[in-house]
Image 1 (cartoon, helix red, strand yellow):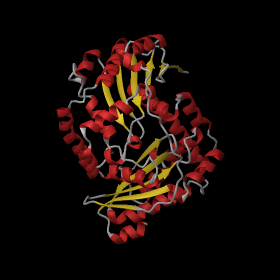
Image 2 (cartoon, one colour):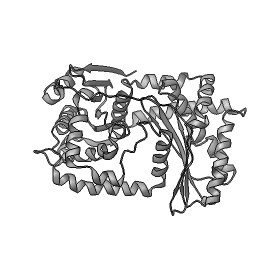
Image 3 (cartoon, rainbow, N blue to C red):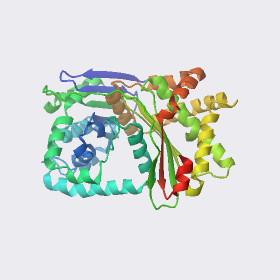
Image 4 (tube, rainbow, N blue to C red):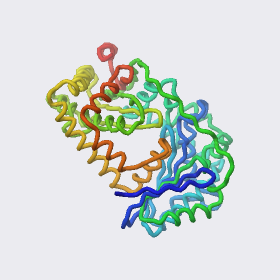
Length: 417
């Protein structure tokens, strides 16, 4: 069993060490509670824009990637609705130097004005690509529909209008406010003594400064029924997405969500795959996505299909959900899906140090804690009765959003709705 050690500095900065005995590699993540939900509407997308600008370097270091290469470190960053996390995967012997680099770059980012304007074109290109991608459109609009009126109803990339509007001054102010050490989390996975990490951080004076940080607030989420969302696009296949908001962020209900995902569409022997194959409508574009935040979570299953067949396939999906609670095979499917969910989670977490560190930082920012053992235990110990009770709450109509993208005729859309 891996142990997790924590140290909170006087200014509020939280350091988490996941001890991995005999590990030869290390995962490092530095995370901030800066994402779509922390942005004003007029500067939507600024967290993601800022993530790009961090890689433009400082006044003394112009190429961040090049600085990490001699250390054998692979680095990246990710922005989500509620957080931005900078990650690195490196050999154990270069971990302290890798952490030192990240701390320096994140504290001393120059955000050069000319680079800022040049990068705007890159951000706009990403936005255009996301608007042309049916998968991404369905996921984005499912989130906006389910969380309408709540801070979680935000897009990470923003809109064309807001991306063009964000000024250099906006970004400098946002950087100074949201990238505050007191609200940040540093997560390290590896075979290290905690004292070495504390010493490394204390040598970076910026990270232990005692000035005030912006207060963070989290609004309660109350689900409400939402209309179907239809997105017209001239594409060969229609993309259909069905999303569910989770009741809470409790470990047991999150475990239910994971198992529900496996039962419905994630596993190769899932209920939906079985039905689609039997009906001759199988598509390999079937996918699921789960995100969990402090107040709630979202589960999305989506698939690509010929537009004319969309009503029938959605009917199949609806029946599959009904079958989860009515057939004699329900309990058997539950046990199989639980094993699949536990195995998939363990494999994913153990696969990459970078993913391990990123997930750890996300969990800590969102819930103030993270324990892989607790998460796996909740999956393993969830009973059939608990799952059935949670499922009844999850599949309530007010927790469901339907999103359609593609060249779908009016009559077809009406049939689906």
